[in-house]
Image (cartoon, rainbow, N blue to C red; front, top):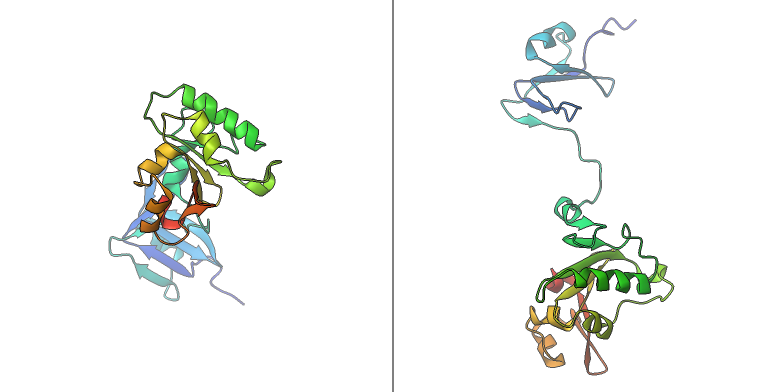
Length: 203
């Protein structure tokens, strides 16, 4: 017969327990039983649910916080993305761009709100999911934004299409200039810049 039904298996005390509850409270102690949190609160109340078999961990002033269960997340990037035309980076998915044509039309509207020289950024498109089955071309981006640097980032984040104004920030003005970057990171095809920038170069 288990005589410890009322006692915790593991307890944490003498620290800062970040609850992330509705009031974003910070507690002093936490206890776990059967892999479930059974107590969060003042350390003075912890003695009511522990005994000599409880593993008590002294946090020594350190912080205990919920585990991060998202396997891959970029909080700063998430803060930049938005569906509005004046977003720091227009999220093409939430802006409801279902085709490359709609994406370019959104870009055109965003550029119209900017002064010359201001950046316009987009992210989130996947060429294979677009009817056109391709990336935007540098010629299309240049036509829409001759006076604004533009970059359109693939949803995976490792490929980005730049217009000529944006390439200038990399000091790339000709196919020869691409050679100062790692191979294939500033794409040249048929002796011309395509606007595609890969890997660490576009970061």
